[in-house]
Image 1 (cartoon, rainbow, N blue to C red):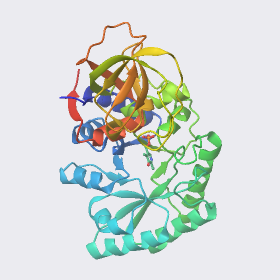
Image 2: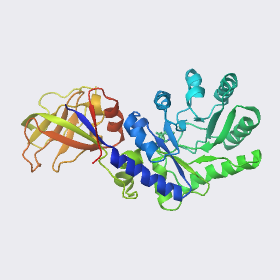
Image 3: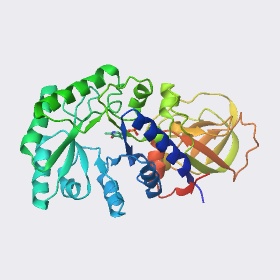
Length: 361
Ligand SMILES: *Cc1c(COP(=O)(O)O)cnc(C)c1O
């Protein structure tokens, strides 16, 4: 049945294994981030088999599932915990990222009540303006406070996040600041921090260049091992010959017709209340596939695997492609394949309308 998401477990395993090995040789551990594929258990298992140091997600439900499967892995919550999930946090999660002392106080109380301990990484905001202390002395004081006063919390280390809200690129300069703050905390608490977490996939280019500041010993990686598209395509950095085409969308053609490329009539708004720009390219051959925004969210982030195909638009349940330049003779009923960037993986793995098929060829 279609639409179908074909997931290549061998490629994902090899990507993870190869990056874990390379990072290990450079003193860096990898937290495998499972939120991008909605924690599909088969794929989580490949991360574990490939020796990720932690299994990480922004969604606590996904980590609870991992623990409930009885998997013996260290789970890391990489979104700041909500007050309403602290009971579950203490019960199921080993390490969490934090930036609010009020939350840490509550975690400490719950740990005490349940006779548990919980590991914490304090986040430093280096300018991307999402989570984290933005003031260096504030994070240093918070670290000292946690170390001295919150007996049931284990201060594991500090970390940062870049390239998410503010699109800020990880550099020697901003990541050196993270290390400097870590060193100051170490001096003040009189011991080494176990984890200095220097970001996500976007920090891999520095590591490959030998420019990741010394001291950073952890990265939290999802996209780079799952899809390996952002760094080769957008950063022009190739990563250890990692595989692409790990998640492939397969969808069926339901219409092929020659049609004008510019809509006929008075243009108002599309299905989502927007007015896209249409270019008049005359009459061209197009096909409609039975899959839509509800499944992949963004058609611009799909990558056709057949030459001569152009994705031109979509609505909730339809994907429209231009096949004028496709040398292959396409028919209604044919199946077309697409590689993808992050957003379609996120939505397709979550869609109940999309059948998941695992292959290991
Ligand atoms: C999603 C996320 C990551 C992983 O990002 P990728 O680009 O998929 O490697 C790392 N850290 C945090 C805090 C995240 O939210």
